[in-house]
Image (tube, rainbow, N blue to C red):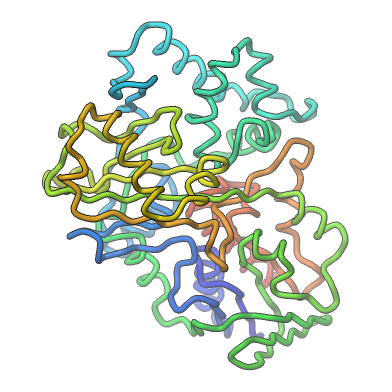
Length: 418
């Protein structure tokens, strides 16, 4: 059997690795000139790896943690939420130093979110906004929830399905601790991809599929196989790339089009030395650059900080040219840190806008209210020839994570073998 995998991101590499190790002939076709997809480690911006895309290992039990250990890489603990600092307009302060009403509100929001796991399976679906209103939160609380709960999902509280969130909370097996790969996420994927037949710079235009046969037409030639695993990001598939002949089933197309993908943007700043105290890990506020964390914060001389914005905030930043967007972020950072000298201290800055990436068109996928089965349907094979993986299909794990993408690749590979 000859299997062709479309995409060399985490899910595509996981599927190919699983098949290769089972003795199956497998080829991976990747449109980019590199592997990794929305994992993209940069080693030029700072004297340590900086992650343009996926950055964290989400959970002490996540498969990414085990793979990093197997690869001989170091997983550095990161305590973001335990050391969260919040700002209502001035300097960001630790939760314990906030006024009681704000401290209590943030705690109440996280507890309400955790209670979603207890929502009955057959309860009517509604948005996270609707659910929080039912819990008694007012408009001000919803603006905080949008930053702390929805931004991390690359969504707004208005467009997140509670049924999908509830299912994820119930099946979560990764744990709550977070880590970074000291050597960079790319080092993990390079190790994982060893020995695989990967054709980079190969843009797939058409997938012809019949029972037990696929013909893949690309800019680099035609490839033939017996099975195909599709791991191309949802936003690209929604644009009709590649085309399928015959077309995907109506049910599959409905599920695909139901998912939503918002832009995700990172702003990177490097200074002559750290311009924050050594304990700073994670800050959040209601501005455009909603969430901030220090990169490789365990390195005392690491003078890099990153802003992360998604959905409407990312769209607003992306509408500016790069210098304007970086200036907006720097001004907000000065407020958060209580400083006015950051322009003089800055040594480099960079914007990475995934919404403009032609092989991603955004961050990760989320499910709107009323479409909670979309991940399950998208994950299902089409006949015995087409199989699907990717973080958007991770209905039995954590979508929007690297480990969810990897587990979806393993699932699709197992389906092929069966």
